[in-house]
Length: 249
Length: 261
Image (cartoon, rainbow over all chains, first blue to last red; front, side, top):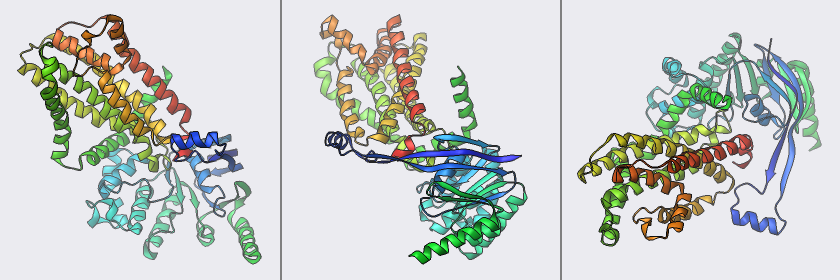
């Protein structure tokens, strides 16, 4: 059974002067005809299906539309065109340290994040101890979150999302955080989750990491789908492409 | 009907998140101090004292139970202002959450409204204390106050939805809203009576929803009468219109909010 199915998905994105302007500024710009809104396709025509239990790596340079695509899969955004079908509960970690509240304690943030990811209070009560233990934050439980280092923050974020066994796990640049020891630990954890049958999507700039962990790869460039398929084949092409690009410069 | 059912289902599904959000808003608002909570209770009382000192000379003689009269006005108005001004920033403040996690966006507004409602409930208790001290006998009619309270809660949620959506688009709305609420306070007949206006001019006051809710309170508590059908209708009408407009905006802009934050 397919866990995720995307059929010709396209997302139109808006950028321009409407952001953070006041009413006066808006009226003045409108009158001066200096009000610009640009629309562009952040993702254009992506089609793939992912079997249950497999792990997909998404690659592409900055602005390729990776994060936007993840937002559509998680339901934060709606595709302008095409269809997204998702079977199963999703735990998504888009941009790790965001969404936490600096004034709340580590414990409160853990519960809040757990709630955001759709878990129940009973489940969080049960898992809380092991989450903190995995993140190695036992001594910081009642400290305000803003006192943590950025490494600690991402460790906590990863622990919450990974320890609670989602059916689909989405990780955006997650594994590149923490020190070497924690990275190793988190990669092991990932394998355990995949072994347990979870479908995973990983966005990473590290091709070696994707080669090691993913069985499928989706390559995006400026919103367009360049390729989708088995890891070794696509990654070879991608690395060749990167090398060429580097040479041109 | 299906819309209500699906909203209810979503609320149930996100109950844990809702509780955590309420807890967070509470903790942030009062900064974990007992005094913080006490302060938000004291500020309407303080306002009331000032108004009593200033206005009793002018209106106090002709208006029976003048302190209770003013308190009723202040009570309703403060709750309205507290809930809507606080709710205005709720969507924007949680942009970090709803751009990363798929959650219903109105949860943020609802959780802010909960702390305003608790504040209102506490002030209401003090209000009844004043009522008792002023020698007004309690009657079964007081239970009817639940009706305008429920309408007011819905009205505040509706206005909060509209404002929080507008705030995402135009940040300067908060300054305009401050001026608006100040004007609204003077039009809500909090410390004066509208009796001195001509009959056909008095009707205009009923265009102000806050005045309608205040009037309901005063009729029940001070006059000891049950308001007529029109007042009941207006209470519900204002609440439903605000909620419908707010709900419509949230539905329509649900995904578009992301572009603005």
